[in-house]
Image 1: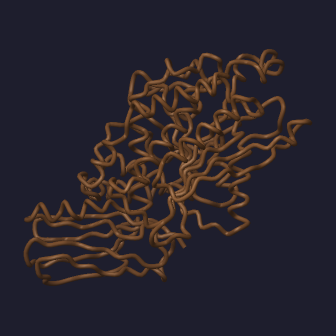
Image 2 (image 1 turned 90 degrees about the horizontal axis):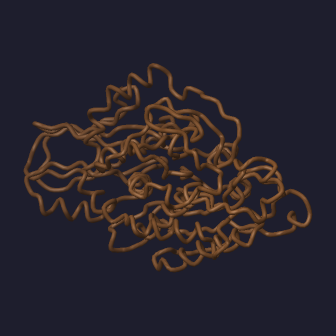
Image 3 (image 1 turned 90 degrees about the vertical axis):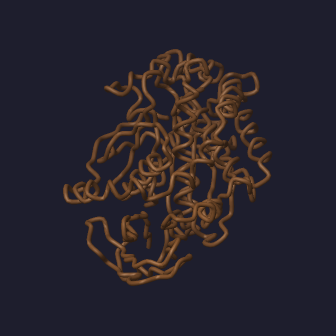
Length: 443
């Protein structure tokens, strides 16, 4: 994570904040916890630790600084790890060149991309990204400028933790046994050359290359999450969300997914800070929605929830300083969000059949959607119901079902062609209960 300037920007109007607070009680029940619980429980702390350890070592080089042998070893390790995941549709290297001094400007650098192709809306892409290079710039400019190619820079927290999270989520979601049915395509990307360095210009080079190429080929990226240093906090299980105004809904979805999955993890509250010190910034530049998940915003400052990371960008950023249990919880949160955004969990519907006597409002699919989506609900016995769609201000925008329905499963189609992009809520009113689901409409 590079040291770029940042500033705060409010991403919500007071009216939208008030509307979100009014809807919060309903959001608490937006998803049945049992549908995601089995998925997040499968996140392995030992696998995360193993990935962090391997990247820290980087083939024995103990550095993944761009243009070093350790950086090459780190990319090779990620490539092997992704290739060992049989459920991924493809694994490829995305080669680019970084502007800077010769001969480094002629040395290829890579992004490693694992793809899990969508089953319904294949062209829509949700991206989980983490940079695999690292830095020791806080050892002092004299040391860093002279020794960047040989200095130990293990980068365990920044950012082996983020890469480990992406690899673990790829493993789980691509496993048919997980029950995850992806409606859109999910890409898992390890970005190269995020950090700046004495031998090359700029930062966020790998994500800039990818996002520019994505825009040039009109890739339909519905959201991007940058996972960047998520493991230093021994006092509290806390992580921070960074967002621009257009991407606020992704931050909200992350918080809602954590809550609904029952993950014991604190986050900052909206409005989220705006900052450009990681790979999400490159996607903002190309007008794609993106957020950053990071241990604190920024990690070189302290707050009531966090003490400034003393190992950031130093040779002491090792596995021994990382709280792997925190890394696991953040990974669980990103996994839950990805499952919510990218598809559904098929065993959720099977589990409903085992629990007669309950009313269920299922996640719409696809979600996000454009312009239409399907909303389903089940009744254990005949009943009078009301199913409506509301916008973020709590205004009803569509009546989808009203009146008596027999026992069983029912599905309706919601077409939002005449509505603006944004977050909407399907609310099912049934005698004795009100169930709500969040939906994202992206034109």
